[in-house]
Image 1 (cartoon, rainbow, N blue to C red):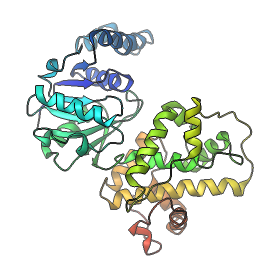
Image 2: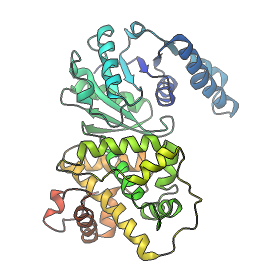
Image 3: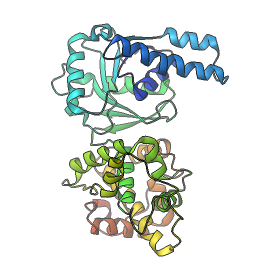
Length: 374
């Protein structure tokens, strides 16, 4: 198996910094790459030194441990300084052309066996790695926000990814105290298709009948979560949410999976520059109206999850684990279906398919399937 000791991180931003800091804390040597020396210093002071000093001040880390971690981290503005890295994780902004160029630039300076991985959340790994020499050493390594807290990592295989590369990334993730799941290359991978379609369907109801507070409460009740979907969107940013929705719709709407339309309310709210106002009035007290939204939300989750299994994007076990770990839902989608009964689950799937949100999964095409083995 490929040995990983030195890790390069492209993009010294919130996500990149957290990924690198996590690796350094677990004993890896880390080299951050940014556009210029001034940015390298500013980001180091903010995301490494500043973040670790807060941990020391709170008693979560000793000064000696901080000094050890800082000693493992350096920064550079020159790709050539990444020549000796065993693994490089790209965590640049979500622009496909930029990411493709980054990998082409890396390919010129790193060893032929250096593993090249992208932390993209929606782009196909195969597309990003086109033209890279020795594509067997390329893969996706998708961390979830916030990367210093969220334990899930999707280890993504594209068609060319070798067993050695995949196994090295699974071992690297585990050594970083993460929960890795195996995912085959697919738009959005495994977890994002579930979460993005969930908020798209929910956001589409926003308007005269349903305020943001009501929609947030419906998601809390439907999923048994402490923090609702609208609250989570405010934390991750509506710009990110809107662009991810548009990207997923473009990828899948006309496929044999299907995907919901981009919600106009999400677009309008994003363009306003404000998050959802979760104090925007009382929560609706109309059981029938609340049920309409809850059924579409659950039907959406059940349908996309079934498609992901049928497409061999992810195993049922890993999808169940991934949803519970990344999204903090107490039950995964398959346990939820079993709990409510497959007849009711089939009714909800049929309902969202008839509304044109998805195509019918084969599992449900013949009527009510047997309960899932969870």
